Length: 239
Image: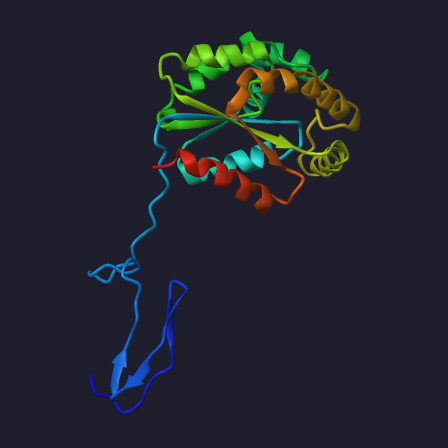
C-alpha cells in the first residue's frame, strides 16, 4: 500500500501497533493470538481444573479468607462457600437452624458440626459446585474435617488446604477496621480474642490431619501479594 504520510501509532487492547515507513509501505506487527482472522478480539480462556477440587481456606478471623476465596472462585469458575455467611443468613431469617446457631455465635464459640452439615449438604448439591468449590473458614475442627471427607466420598474430589498465616496484632487491627464498616455483632475486640483463641486451639490439629495437603501462605502482606502466592500454588492443579 503506497502512501505519502505515515500516521502515528495506535493501540488495541493495550498493544501498540506502530506504523513504519519501509519503501513507502506500511508494516504492522500484530500478535497472532490477539486478533482472529475475522477481525474479532479473542477472549482469554479461563483456567480449568484438571479434576474436581475442594479448596479449604484455613485461617483466623480477619486473615483475609473471604477476600482471597472470592477472588480464586471467580478465576476458576467454581463456587465460593462461606459457611459463616450461610449461618448468618439462617440467623437473619430466624430459621430453626439459625436460632440454634445463634446461641454459639453470640458467645464466639464453634457451631456444632450437625448444624453445618444440614446447610452444607444442600449447598454443595447446586450446579456451581460440580467442578469444585471453596470452603471459606470450614472445617474448624477434626470432627468437621471428617464430615467433609464423608460428604466427599461420592465425588472423590481432590482436597487442598490453603492456610493463611497472620500475626495476631495485625488481626486485631483488621478486625477493628472491619467492625466499623460491617457492624457485625461478632466483631467486638472481646469476641475477636475468643475467636482467635478457638482457632489457635484447633489449627495444629487440622494441619496435622491434612498433612501434605496444606499450603502455608504469608497473609501479612497486602491483598495482591497474598493473591499472587495463592495463584502460584494453584497452577499445579490446572490443565
